[in-house]
Length: 59
Image (cartoon, rainbow, N blue to C red; front, side, top):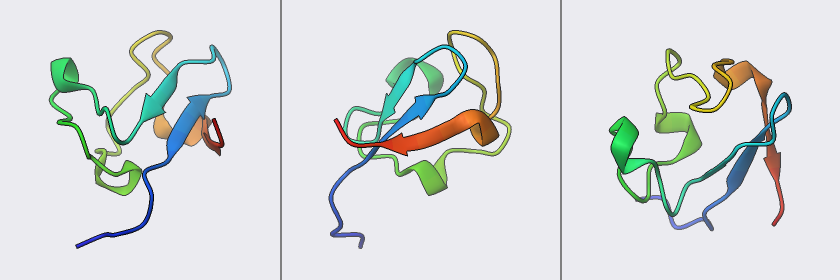
C-alpha cells in the first residue's frame, strides 16, 4: 500500500492537470490511481500527447 501523498501531473503542452486523488473515471482511471499506474499508452484528454509530456507539479 502506498501511503505517500497524492500528486498532480501537468501537461507541459496544454496545461491539463491529472490529479491522482481524483483520477479520471471517464478514462477508466478510478480515484486514487497513481501516475505510475497510468498506462504508458494513455494520452492527454485535451491535446493527445503522451505521459512523457507531463511533469509533476505542486498545487
